[in-house]
Length: 364
Image 1 (tube, helix red, strand yellow):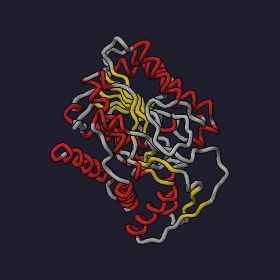
Image 2 (cartoon, one colour):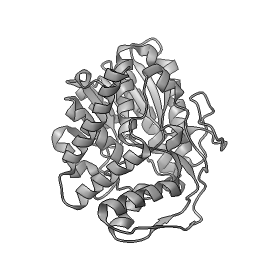
Image 3 (spheres, helix red, strand yellow):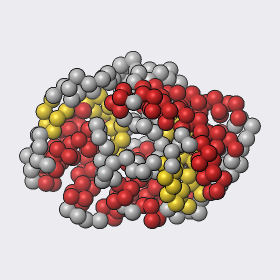
Protein backbone atom coordinates (compact mmCIF):
# COMPACT_ATOMS: atom_id res chain seq x y z
CA UNK A 1 0.00 0.00 0.00
CA UNK A 2 1.58 3.27 -1.13
CA UNK A 3 0.98 6.49 0.78
CA UNK A 4 2.07 10.12 1.00
CA UNK A 5 5.32 10.20 2.97
CA UNK A 6 5.94 13.45 4.83
CA UNK A 7 9.56 12.44 5.49
CA UNK A 8 10.14 12.28 1.72
CA UNK A 9 9.08 15.92 1.36
CA UNK A 10 11.03 17.17 4.38
CA UNK A 11 13.65 19.53 2.94
CA UNK A 12 12.61 18.97 -0.69
CA UNK A 13 12.50 22.06 -2.93
CA UNK A 14 8.94 22.15 -4.29
CA UNK A 15 7.57 24.75 -6.70
CA UNK A 16 3.80 25.16 -6.93
CA UNK A 17 2.15 27.38 -9.53
CA UNK A 18 -1.26 28.80 -8.66
CA UNK A 19 -0.40 28.55 -4.96
CA UNK A 20 -2.71 31.39 -3.87
CA UNK A 21 -5.88 29.62 -5.04
CA UNK A 22 -8.17 27.39 -3.01
CA UNK A 23 -6.57 24.06 -3.95
CA UNK A 24 -3.10 25.61 -4.00
CA UNK A 25 -3.53 26.88 -0.43
CA UNK A 26 -4.41 23.41 0.86
CA UNK A 27 -1.42 22.02 -1.08
CA UNK A 28 0.92 24.58 0.52
CA UNK A 29 -0.46 23.81 3.97
CA UNK A 30 0.21 20.09 3.58
CA UNK A 31 3.75 20.66 2.27
CA UNK A 32 4.64 23.25 4.91
CA UNK A 33 3.48 20.84 7.61
CA UNK A 34 5.70 18.17 6.02
CA UNK A 35 8.78 20.41 6.21
CA UNK A 36 9.16 21.01 2.47
CA UNK A 37 10.94 24.11 1.17
CA UNK A 38 7.92 25.49 -0.65
CA UNK A 39 7.97 28.18 -3.31
CA UNK A 40 4.73 29.38 -4.84
CA UNK A 41 4.40 31.28 -8.10
CA UNK A 42 1.06 32.75 -9.05
CA UNK A 43 -1.19 35.77 -9.20
CA UNK A 44 -2.57 37.56 -6.18
CA UNK A 45 -5.27 35.47 -4.51
CA UNK A 46 -8.30 35.55 -6.83
CA UNK A 47 -10.97 36.20 -4.18
CA UNK A 48 -11.54 38.45 -1.21
CA UNK A 49 -11.55 36.94 1.35
CA UNK A 50 -9.19 34.13 0.40
CA UNK A 51 -7.77 31.08 2.11
CA UNK A 52 -4.13 31.95 1.39
CA UNK A 53 -4.28 35.20 3.37
CA UNK A 54 -6.60 33.89 6.09
CA UNK A 55 -4.00 31.25 6.98
CA UNK A 56 -1.03 33.63 6.56
CA UNK A 57 0.67 31.15 4.28
CA UNK A 58 2.90 33.80 2.70
CA UNK A 59 4.74 34.08 6.03
CA UNK A 60 5.52 30.35 6.04
CA UNK A 61 6.86 29.85 2.51
CA UNK A 62 8.49 31.64 -0.40
CA UNK A 63 5.50 33.28 -2.12
CA UNK A 64 6.21 34.93 -5.47
CA UNK A 65 3.49 36.93 -7.18
CA UNK A 66 3.82 36.47 -10.92
CA UNK A 67 2.02 35.48 -14.10
CA UNK A 68 2.70 32.12 -15.77
CA UNK A 69 2.47 33.96 -19.09
CA UNK A 70 5.63 35.90 -18.13
CA UNK A 71 8.26 33.44 -19.31
CA UNK A 72 11.31 35.53 -18.39
CA UNK A 73 10.12 36.03 -14.80
CA UNK A 74 9.24 32.38 -14.49
CA UNK A 75 12.62 31.26 -15.79
CA UNK A 76 14.37 33.50 -13.27
CA UNK A 77 12.42 31.84 -10.46
CA UNK A 78 13.45 28.39 -11.68
CA UNK A 79 17.10 29.46 -11.87
CA UNK A 80 16.98 30.96 -8.37
CA UNK A 81 15.29 28.15 -6.46
CA UNK A 82 16.36 25.08 -8.50
CA UNK A 83 13.19 23.08 -7.72
CA UNK A 84 13.28 19.30 -7.47
CA UNK A 85 9.50 18.88 -7.78
CA UNK A 86 7.12 21.10 -9.76
CA UNK A 87 3.33 20.94 -9.45
CA UNK A 88 1.55 23.09 -12.01
CA UNK A 89 -1.89 24.25 -10.86
CA UNK A 90 -2.07 27.83 -12.16
CA UNK A 91 -5.09 28.23 -14.44
CA UNK A 92 -8.16 30.20 -15.35
CA UNK A 93 -10.48 27.54 -13.85
CA UNK A 94 -14.04 28.84 -14.28
CA UNK A 95 -16.19 27.55 -17.17
CA UNK A 96 -18.45 30.62 -17.37
CA UNK A 97 -15.47 32.98 -17.23
CA UNK A 98 -13.98 31.09 -20.19
CA UNK A 99 -17.02 32.04 -22.29
CA UNK A 100 -16.55 35.70 -21.33
CA UNK A 101 -12.77 35.75 -21.82
CA UNK A 102 -11.75 32.85 -24.11
CA UNK A 103 -8.48 34.42 -25.31
CA UNK A 104 -7.27 35.01 -21.75
CA UNK A 105 -8.33 31.47 -20.79
CA UNK A 106 -6.35 29.88 -23.62
CA UNK A 107 -3.40 32.17 -23.00
CA UNK A 108 -3.14 31.18 -19.33
CA UNK A 109 -4.05 27.52 -19.62
CA UNK A 110 -2.13 26.67 -22.79
CA UNK A 111 0.78 29.10 -23.04
CA UNK A 112 1.16 29.02 -19.27
CA UNK A 113 1.74 25.27 -19.56
CA UNK A 114 4.19 25.79 -22.44
CA UNK A 115 6.15 28.27 -20.32
CA UNK A 116 6.29 25.96 -17.32
CA UNK A 117 7.44 23.00 -19.41
CA UNK A 118 10.05 25.11 -21.16
CA UNK A 119 11.41 26.18 -17.77
CA UNK A 120 11.45 22.54 -16.65
CA UNK A 121 13.29 21.64 -19.86
CA UNK A 122 16.01 24.20 -19.13
CA UNK A 123 16.32 23.41 -15.42
CA UNK A 124 18.43 20.36 -14.58
CA UNK A 125 17.31 20.19 -10.95
CA UNK A 126 13.72 19.07 -11.69
CA UNK A 127 13.10 15.34 -11.28
CA UNK A 128 9.31 15.20 -10.95
CA UNK A 129 6.66 17.30 -12.72
CA UNK A 130 2.87 17.04 -12.28
CA UNK A 131 0.47 19.00 -14.49
CA UNK A 132 -2.93 19.32 -12.81
CA UNK A 133 -5.82 19.39 -15.28
CA UNK A 134 -9.49 18.40 -14.94
CA UNK A 135 -12.08 15.71 -15.60
CA UNK A 136 -13.49 18.07 -18.25
CA UNK A 137 -10.62 17.40 -20.68
CA UNK A 138 -12.50 14.43 -22.15
CA UNK A 139 -14.84 14.55 -25.12
CA UNK A 140 -18.08 14.18 -23.17
CA UNK A 141 -20.43 11.68 -24.76
CA UNK A 142 -22.82 11.72 -21.76
CA UNK A 143 -21.90 8.11 -21.03
CA UNK A 144 -23.13 6.49 -17.84
CA UNK A 145 -19.68 5.02 -17.14
CA UNK A 146 -16.49 6.83 -16.18
CA UNK A 147 -13.93 8.11 -18.65
CA UNK A 148 -10.57 6.35 -18.77
CA UNK A 149 -7.18 7.93 -19.34
CA UNK A 150 -7.04 6.68 -22.96
CA UNK A 151 -10.32 8.33 -23.99
CA UNK A 152 -10.36 11.19 -26.52
CA UNK A 153 -9.39 14.62 -25.19
CA UNK A 154 -11.63 17.35 -26.60
CA UNK A 155 -13.32 19.55 -23.99
CA UNK A 156 -16.39 21.47 -25.16
CA UNK A 157 -16.15 24.95 -23.61
CA UNK A 158 -13.03 27.17 -23.78
CA UNK A 159 -11.92 26.26 -20.24
CA UNK A 160 -12.28 22.51 -20.76
CA UNK A 161 -10.77 22.65 -24.24
CA UNK A 162 -7.82 24.74 -23.07
CA UNK A 163 -7.07 22.11 -20.44
CA UNK A 164 -7.28 19.43 -23.14
CA UNK A 165 -4.68 21.46 -25.03
CA UNK A 166 -2.56 21.66 -21.87
CA UNK A 167 -2.59 17.87 -21.77
CA UNK A 168 -1.49 17.66 -25.42
CA UNK A 169 1.29 20.21 -24.86
CA UNK A 170 2.56 18.14 -21.94
CA UNK A 171 2.46 14.95 -24.02
CA UNK A 172 4.42 16.61 -26.82
CA UNK A 173 7.11 17.98 -24.50
CA UNK A 174 7.37 14.62 -22.78
CA UNK A 175 8.02 12.80 -26.06
CA UNK A 176 10.14 15.48 -27.70
CA UNK A 177 12.37 16.58 -24.83
CA UNK A 178 12.16 14.33 -21.78
CA UNK A 179 12.23 10.77 -23.10
CA UNK A 180 15.99 10.43 -22.53
CA UNK A 181 16.20 12.53 -19.37
CA UNK A 182 15.87 11.51 -15.74
CA UNK A 183 12.66 13.43 -15.16
CA UNK A 184 9.13 12.08 -14.68
CA UNK A 185 6.20 13.92 -16.33
CA UNK A 186 2.58 13.23 -15.34
CA UNK A 187 -0.82 14.80 -15.92
CA UNK A 188 -3.61 14.30 -13.37
CA UNK A 189 -7.29 14.81 -14.16
CA UNK A 190 -9.34 15.52 -11.05
CA UNK A 191 -13.07 15.58 -10.53
CA UNK A 192 -14.98 18.47 -8.94
CA UNK A 193 -13.14 19.59 -5.82
CA UNK A 194 -14.96 20.97 -2.78
CA UNK A 195 -13.84 21.85 0.73
CA UNK A 196 -13.45 24.52 3.36
CA UNK A 197 -12.01 27.87 2.32
CA UNK A 198 -13.32 28.10 -1.24
CA UNK A 199 -14.65 31.62 -1.86
CA UNK A 200 -14.80 31.50 -5.67
CA UNK A 201 -17.67 32.88 -7.69
CA UNK A 202 -19.83 30.54 -9.76
CA UNK A 203 -19.04 27.39 -7.78
CA UNK A 204 -21.82 25.47 -6.11
CA UNK A 205 -20.50 25.09 -2.55
CA UNK A 206 -19.25 28.70 -2.18
CA UNK A 207 -22.61 29.86 -3.60
CA UNK A 208 -24.38 27.71 -1.00
CA UNK A 209 -22.29 29.08 1.86
CA UNK A 210 -22.77 32.71 0.83
CA UNK A 211 -26.53 32.26 0.67
CA UNK A 212 -26.76 30.22 3.88
CA UNK A 213 -24.58 32.59 5.91
CA UNK A 214 -26.85 35.46 4.84
CA UNK A 215 -30.03 33.48 5.53
CA UNK A 216 -31.02 33.45 1.85
CA UNK A 217 -32.56 30.72 -0.24
CA UNK A 218 -29.92 28.86 -2.27
CA UNK A 219 -30.36 29.18 -6.03
CA UNK A 220 -29.35 26.13 -8.08
CA UNK A 221 -29.27 26.64 -11.83
CA UNK A 222 -28.79 23.02 -12.94
CA UNK A 223 -29.71 20.53 -10.19
CA UNK A 224 -29.72 17.45 -12.44
CA UNK A 225 -26.10 17.58 -13.66
CA UNK A 226 -24.11 14.66 -12.23
CA UNK A 227 -20.53 15.38 -11.17
CA UNK A 228 -17.68 13.52 -9.35
CA UNK A 229 -17.53 15.62 -6.17
CA UNK A 230 -14.59 15.03 -3.82
CA UNK A 231 -12.91 16.65 -0.85
CA UNK A 232 -9.98 18.89 -1.75
CA UNK A 233 -7.56 16.71 0.21
CA UNK A 234 -8.23 13.73 -2.07
CA UNK A 235 -6.54 15.19 -5.17
CA UNK A 236 -3.97 17.15 -3.16
CA UNK A 237 -2.62 13.98 -1.55
CA UNK A 238 -2.93 12.11 -4.86
CA UNK A 239 -0.80 14.75 -6.65
CA UNK A 240 1.81 14.56 -3.90
CA UNK A 241 1.80 10.76 -3.87
CA UNK A 242 2.35 10.62 -7.63
CA UNK A 243 5.08 13.29 -7.52
CA UNK A 244 6.81 11.35 -4.74
CA UNK A 245 6.58 7.90 -6.34
CA UNK A 246 7.64 8.96 -9.84
CA UNK A 247 10.56 10.90 -8.34
CA UNK A 248 11.97 7.50 -7.38
CA UNK A 249 10.65 5.56 -10.38
CA UNK A 250 10.16 7.36 -13.68
CA UNK A 251 8.24 4.38 -15.08
CA UNK A 252 5.27 5.33 -12.91
CA UNK A 253 4.75 8.61 -14.79
CA UNK A 254 1.76 8.91 -17.11
CA UNK A 255 -1.82 10.22 -16.98
CA UNK A 256 -4.14 9.53 -14.05
CA UNK A 257 -7.75 10.20 -13.10
CA UNK A 258 -8.52 11.17 -9.50
CA UNK A 259 -12.15 11.08 -8.45
CA UNK A 260 -14.63 9.63 -6.00
CA UNK A 261 -16.24 6.22 -6.09
CA UNK A 262 -19.44 5.96 -8.12
CA UNK A 263 -21.64 6.28 -5.03
CA UNK A 264 -20.31 9.82 -4.51
CA UNK A 265 -20.98 10.99 -8.07
CA UNK A 266 -24.05 13.09 -7.33
CA UNK A 267 -26.52 15.36 -9.04
CA UNK A 268 -25.96 18.96 -8.02
CA UNK A 269 -29.38 19.07 -6.36
CA UNK A 270 -28.47 16.05 -4.22
CA UNK A 271 -25.23 17.74 -3.19
CA UNK A 272 -27.06 20.91 -2.18
CA UNK A 273 -29.59 18.90 -0.18
CA UNK A 274 -26.70 17.30 1.72
CA UNK A 275 -25.28 20.74 2.37
CA UNK A 276 -28.60 22.11 3.63
CA UNK A 277 -29.09 19.14 5.96
CA UNK A 278 -25.61 19.46 7.48
CA UNK A 279 -25.72 23.27 7.67
CA UNK A 280 -29.13 23.32 9.29
CA UNK A 281 -28.04 20.70 11.84
CA UNK A 282 -24.87 22.55 12.82
CA UNK A 283 -26.18 26.12 12.55
CA UNK A 284 -29.69 25.51 13.85
CA UNK A 285 -31.18 27.10 10.73
CA UNK A 286 -33.72 26.24 8.02
CA UNK A 287 -31.93 26.93 4.75
CA UNK A 288 -33.56 25.53 1.58
CA UNK A 289 -32.71 25.60 -2.11
CA UNK A 290 -34.64 26.40 -5.26
CA UNK A 291 -34.21 25.28 -8.87
CA UNK A 292 -33.92 28.34 -11.11
CA UNK A 293 -32.37 27.66 -14.51
CA UNK A 294 -30.69 30.88 -15.66
CA UNK A 295 -30.15 30.04 -19.33
CA UNK A 296 -26.38 29.93 -18.90
CA UNK A 297 -23.85 28.45 -21.34
CA UNK A 298 -23.55 24.78 -22.22
CA UNK A 299 -22.62 22.40 -19.42
CA UNK A 300 -22.32 18.63 -19.47
CA UNK A 301 -25.20 16.74 -17.89
CA UNK A 302 -23.29 13.62 -16.89
CA UNK A 303 -19.60 13.33 -16.10
CA UNK A 304 -17.55 10.94 -13.98
CA UNK A 305 -14.14 9.30 -14.03
CA UNK A 306 -12.86 5.75 -14.07
CA UNK A 307 -10.07 5.72 -11.48
CA UNK A 308 -9.05 2.08 -11.92
CA UNK A 309 -5.55 3.00 -13.09
CA UNK A 310 -4.44 5.02 -10.06
CA UNK A 311 -6.05 2.43 -7.79
CA UNK A 312 -4.15 -0.40 -9.45
CA UNK A 313 -0.75 1.27 -9.71
CA UNK A 314 -0.64 3.23 -6.44
CA UNK A 315 -3.25 1.31 -4.41
CA UNK A 316 -4.91 4.70 -4.01
CA UNK A 317 -8.52 5.04 -2.98
CA UNK A 318 -10.79 7.89 -1.80
CA UNK A 319 -10.73 8.36 1.97
CA UNK A 320 -13.70 10.61 2.72
CA UNK A 321 -17.16 9.94 1.29
CA UNK A 322 -19.45 12.80 0.34
CA UNK A 323 -21.18 12.86 3.74
CA UNK A 324 -17.86 13.22 5.57
CA UNK A 325 -16.74 15.81 3.04
CA UNK A 326 -19.85 17.88 3.72
CA UNK A 327 -19.28 17.61 7.48
CA UNK A 328 -15.73 18.95 6.99
CA UNK A 329 -16.96 21.82 4.80
CA UNK A 330 -19.51 22.96 7.36
CA UNK A 331 -16.98 22.44 10.17
CA UNK A 332 -14.49 24.76 8.46
CA UNK A 333 -17.08 27.43 7.69
CA UNK A 334 -18.54 27.28 11.19
CA UNK A 335 -15.04 27.95 12.56
CA UNK A 336 -14.48 30.77 10.06
CA UNK A 337 -17.81 32.50 10.70
CA UNK A 338 -17.33 32.30 14.47
CA UNK A 339 -13.85 33.83 14.29
CA UNK A 340 -11.95 30.69 15.30
CA UNK A 341 -8.50 29.73 14.01
CA UNK A 342 -9.21 28.11 10.64
CA UNK A 343 -5.54 27.30 10.14
CA UNK A 344 -5.79 24.97 13.13
CA UNK A 345 -9.03 23.56 11.68
CA UNK A 346 -7.15 22.77 8.46
CA UNK A 347 -4.33 21.13 10.41
CA UNK A 348 -6.86 18.96 12.23
CA UNK A 349 -8.51 17.90 8.98
CA UNK A 350 -5.16 17.14 7.33
CA UNK A 351 -4.13 15.08 10.35
CA UNK A 352 -7.41 13.15 10.34
CA UNK A 353 -7.06 12.46 6.62
CA UNK A 354 -3.47 11.24 6.99
CA UNK A 355 -4.41 8.98 9.91
CA UNK A 356 -6.84 7.17 7.59
CA UNK A 357 -3.92 6.54 5.23
CA UNK A 358 -1.86 5.11 8.07
CA UNK A 359 -4.69 2.81 9.16
CA UNK A 360 -4.82 1.43 5.61
CA UNK A 361 -1.12 0.61 5.85
CA UNK A 362 -1.51 -1.13 9.19
CA UNK A 363 -4.77 -2.97 8.62
CA UNK A 364 -5.16 -3.13 4.84
